[in-house]
Image (cartoon, rainbow, N blue to C red; front, side, top):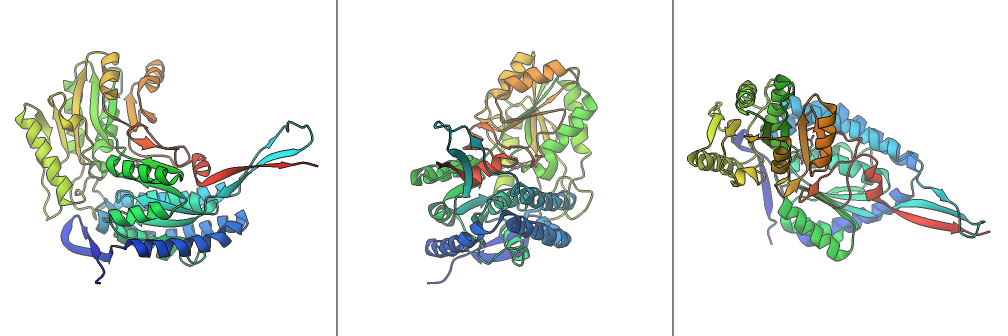
Length: 458
Ligand code: UN1
């Protein structure tokens, strides 16, 4: 039987095949899982400082290769080079952070019911963790899952998105000298490969779309293993009349359009309390000023969309709503080149209930919506099925705190873009956006270990 392959192509030059990799069949995933699990048994027994040192060595290797890896991220997923470089730097910092986490106290001592026993908790790794990761943060997301998994003594089986296998394989190569053989295995492939990863793992962490995440969660729950899924967003920014209008417009333009809006944390709906028109014009001007084009140019903020299909879907949605009465405030730029470019687009008067206001389009499009009051803004912000992150722009502390309380999301940003996460803090959403425990920050340790309660009686 001939082996099936998949290929990733450059979004800015679709004739450029970045890599051809195996669509790994289910039985080969099982073999890789067995090997990784075996390697993991000695890894779990290493002292924490040894695992920490190995992760620091990974950080070192990544830092030394940052130029080359940044260029690969630009080529494979079309992320603008300045942002891609920042993501690689974030990857280095994530590795160092979780290396340190491995050295923190691991348990607690409790008062025993019998008054004399030593009642305490320890933490143990799960064994083999399966990671299924998206293409949009091909360095940071695999690392903010793999680093804590490894730090706490697990082996890792990583299935990257079919759009970004080259970056994942290169990461594993870079870490090969720093980690024991086999504790970090990459298996490339499509849905069936991912299912096999879920079937082989002792815990599963997923980032991607809502339908795929739901399927992963169902499968993992069916096997009774811990699972966390980070899925889509349809994120709102609420602009209050007292906000610094220029600062808000600049932040929202970046949050909606940076990396062509291809982030689950991108801003898609801009809810303006009061007369929306002046702010809509400011936002359109800020978006129009964002450099759009070749992702290899250090000035570029908005590059191409990753593939043809999502680009065409966004185009069709823009045509649909403008046909239905929406106004295009900006959205006609077209750079040179054959990339899957979609002009950064700001819309007003999008018909209520349109999919563009409810679904995640994962592209450089946002809509301005008027709200007569703060109550209406909250209602509009919360009326979607997603609940990842929201931004509030105001200078009033009271308004900020009240809104932070009423927005049905996992993360609130006040006077800051919805995109951009801090790996020191827990990350995750409400409603359809997330399933299972939080990731990143101290929350990662809870997910990648299980607690064992030990009673030592004299
Ligand atoms: C960020 O905004 O820096 O897939 C990270 C995503 C999110 C990560 C966002 N899970 O877009």
